Image (cartoon, rainbow, N blue to C red; front, top):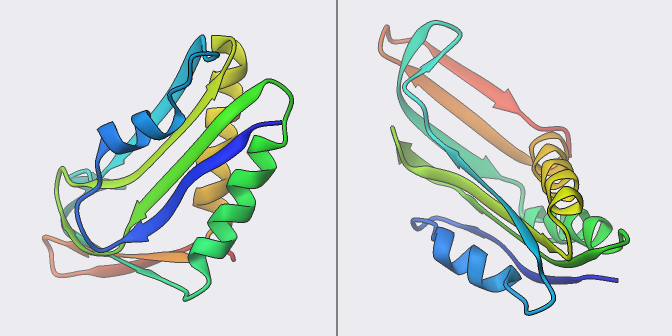
Length: 141
């Protein structure tokens, strides 16, 4: 059984190095790391900024999601951090990582972790478009 070593939601810039260090382990032969960044367009519309808001229980929900991944066979360690507040194009929005003895297990677990965070963590994204439009994108929590 693996270990959840880092879960957080922050209004400050995220660190890939911190997340990678959290899951590093001598037994790990593979680490799957995903970095989600703010892109400059969505659906063909130019994005100027994103604003993320989260429910007060978001860290608890993310810890449960990370724990479910950590409970999978072959998982050594799990980490997940998400940003809230106003983000510019290119900023890191989310960083997750999973370490396992073998790369294949790490890829599968890492993809499941980011998919679960995107689908289930109570975090909402407000996109501001260059044309003046605004769109809210929400996760079911």
